[in-house]
Amino acid sequence: APIDLVKIVSDVVSEVKTVYPQKITAKLPEQLLYPIKPTDFRNIAHNLVENAAKYSPENSDISVLLKNEDEKLLFQVADHGIGISRENREKIFERFYREDKSHSSKVNGSGLGLAIVKAEVDKYHGQITVEDNSPQGTIFSVYLPE
Ligand code: ATP
Ligand code: MG
Image 1 (cartoon, rainbow, N blue to C red):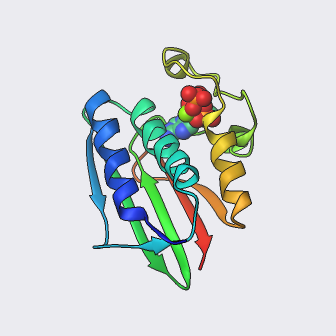
Image 2 (cartoon, rainbow, N blue to C red):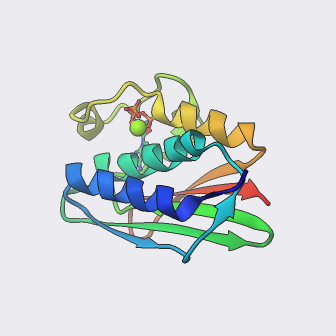
């Protein structure tokens, strides 16, 4: 049965805001009904929004977007954080992989978050893309088929 993804994204953003200092701006429709298991979408949203906060400076902005686009659903998280090196862009979806950067070693994590996100996205035949944000940082986009 379809569930309202707006409610899940709002909850996730509120939760991450209670733990991390960044300003998170969410651009959400009134309602977006989609047939997905609530815990699966929550995992995707929580991992991506938490990563954006974990790997960004305290005073930076994070943008979250949820909308229908070209017969697909788009969930996007954009940060102005430390970024991900081009050569390791595929590896971040592997289990236990973490970027070998001084700043990321200060941040706790098991390297499982994105492997779980990728598995959930695959389960619904969706796609996930990673690109550089401007002037710096990362944009993760999840597309799920209608
Ligand atoms: P966990 O999510 O299991 O607590 P984690 O955050 O280290 O641990 P992943 O979410 O799988 O693991 O991310 C893997 C690695 O990708 C991270 O350790 C980090 O190096 C890099 N990464 C993920 N998201 C971002 C981001 N938004 N900006 C910069 N680097 C990121
Ligand atoms: Mg993570």
